[in-house]
Every structure is written in C-alpha cells, then in structure tokens.
Image (cartoon, rainbow, N blue to C red; front, side):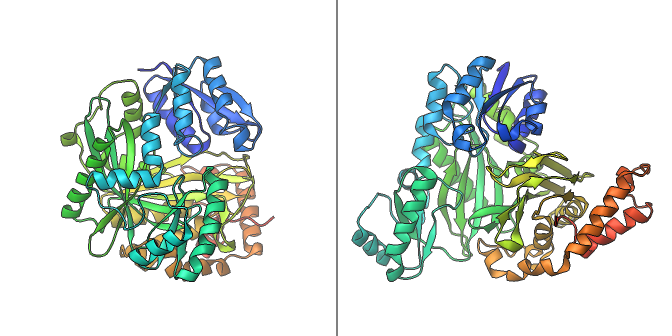
Length: 508
C-alpha cells in the first residue's frame, strides 16, 4: 500500500478521500488555489501545496502544477476525485509517465469510455442495450436529419465528450435540428474542447438508474447494486437513493449482468459506474460509464458497508479487492441530498459569499460529507455543491423521515442555498410514493413556489436570534442553546422560524 498520496481536487471530495487515507495510515497531500487557502481540505491534509490562481485552468486543471506538487511532496500516487481532471486520459497518462501511480483506470480505458460514441459501439458489441441512435460521427446536417427521421422525434443532441448535461438539447421537430446542432457544438467545444455531437432517441419519463462496480487488476469484478438518480435539474442530479423502488429482482439481475459484461469487455481496472435509462416497461438502455468515483457513492457505501475509496487504493496498488460478491450484503435504505450554494427560486443562480452561520446535523443514521466551515468564503470559480447529506434507515420510509429531520436541523446562513428546496422535494407526495423520472422537477413546478413562505424580514429575525443564542451559555445536549428540545426562547424561536420556511437562506 502507498505511504503518501496526493488528492488532485478540492472541497468535500478531497476531505472524503483524505479520511480513508487516515483510516489506512496513508499520508495525504492537498493542493489548493488562492481561493482555497483556508479550505477545510487544506487544513486537514498532512501536507498542502499551492498550485495557482483561482480559475480552474490555472490551478486544478493545470496538469503541470499538479504533477509539480506531487513530485515536491514525493507522493507515490494521485487520486483525482471527481470532476476536474478525474476523467482526463491525458492527465492519467501524464501521471504514469511521471513515475507516479494514477488511482483509477488506465488512460486507454478512460479514453474508450469517455467518448460516448466509442462507448456506445463497445457496449453494443458486448451485448449491452443502447438507446437507439448514432454509433459513428457524422458532420453532415443532412445525414443527421436522415438519422433523426429513422429513430423518430423527439431526439436528443449530445456531445460525444464530457458530461454533466452540458451541451445536451432536446429537439422536437426537424426544423429545430440545425439550430440545436449549432448551439450544442459551440457549447461542447467550450466545455470539453471537442465540437463532436451525435443524436439518440429522446426517452420520455424514464428513470436514471446506475450500477456500481469494482474490478481489480486480476479480473475479479463485483457489483454493489443500484442507485436511483432520477431527481435532476438540467441533467444534473440533486437527490439520490440506494436501492431503487423501481428495480425488481429480475431487472437488477439483468442490469448487473450487463454492467459486468461491459467492464469485462474493456478489461476495466478500478471503481466505476454504469449509468442506464429505464422505462416503465422495465427496458433499460446504456447511457454512459463514469470511470471515477461518483458524487453519490455515499449511499452505496451506507447500504453495503464497503468503503469505495479504500477499494480504489487497493486496486491501484495492485492488491485484490477486499470483498467478494458473496460477502456483499445490502442493509436498509439510504438517501442523499446535495446541498449547494445556489438559489432554486432564481433559476439556480450560484450564490458565492461568506458562510456566517453553519450548523451541520447529526444523529442516528446520518452522514455529512462537507467541504466548508463557518466563515469560509464560497468562491465563484467552482461547482456550487458544498456538502452532501446522507440519511440511512431500515427502509425507505425511515430514510426519508430522517432526511427531513437533518434538512430541518441544517443551519446555513450568509449565502442563498437549496436546503428549503431539497426539503420540499423529500416531502412531495410523488417523491414519497417513489413516482420518479428524469423530468420530475419539470413536471412538479409547485416545488418552485415555496419561496413565498420566506421573507427577508423573517430571515433577518432568525439570524439575530441565532447570534443572540450563540452568546448564551450552552444548554446540555444543545449547541449554544439553539437546538435543544428543552431550550429557552432563542431555541424555540429558531425552531419556529425553521418550520415557517425562512431558514437556510440569507438576505444581506
């Protein structure tokens, strides 16, 4: 096993990886931009190295700067986390060429699965169902119009590289296609450095279900069940859970078989995720493969008890997986909510600024993966996600009830955030019933009408009460008297404000 690794990332994912390093007696090295000098991941690490100005291309996407930090620190391996350079095959190869171990699949494997057209061809050859559409590049508008007619409108224009929903456009009719292609190509070039796009059939009211796998260098592969990731905004996930209410024993067996066939077909080494779309007839179609740790890996860890980062380190060091398939047991249900510094009631506008008050929830069945602290300034340069809340229960109902509790306990002031919106989602009767699909938020526009309950005056009162409470003598079992069941005026007033809907937002 490695003695020291560098984490080429920031925030909550960097901290999450470092904690496994600590558990395994591995030293961790942080990298940071000017904007992250006071970030919790920097202070937690055993060593930290500055790699440049705040813009990602000058720091976290700067391959030379990251490698320089690895060499200076004498790190034996680099973990890329997710986002940034995590699925960049050039970075993976540069790490290996520098004599350092890349904690992930090979550059060739990343490249093979990173190009969606190439991945679709590979999956088709391996017998994995794919969404009807292109499998080869076509630059001709006329050829694409012909293909669109063959597969049937509506169609989806997608970049062949990248992910996260960027550059994707639904086209309802032929007269819209050419304009959508132009826009998608420009967006794809800007986001991923490649203007190649392709078409596939747009599937309406489908679920986004993914299968978690791990495969070591000796060809030993296991699966860790499925995750439901259908609650999305702009093709980006917001709420995830493990397992899925829609996946039957038969469907799970078929999807797992396809996922393992896919990773064996490419000789995959590492932890990865096969993403599928599932319709109401239980047909499933390959969407893409993520050759890295997923944001939502936490719910799988909570239900299976498997530390996926530990498995990544074991695989990269040439060791066997520490679990066999027979040893994997599924226990209960887990739900994750992504807490972000953005305003759902204003087109999800990012909300950079200083966190003036932060109280993170706890209690039975609760996990918080956070990358911020009180007084930390949320930069404008990076993804607005700042933490993940994970609630576990013996069943789905208990997990949802706990998620409501922890969202109600979470206190975050100084920036606008999506906590009230997340609470509205997990309270929604269709969510509770498990009636989910990728258009869930578009269909339930009532979720965007919660802001009427939150007034600037009310929020100001809440902030003043919390400031007052923080100066009082802490009550037993209640931090600063603000959350105790037997608390006095400040604690009761705070809970009243929470129930009134003003919490979790800040008006300056």
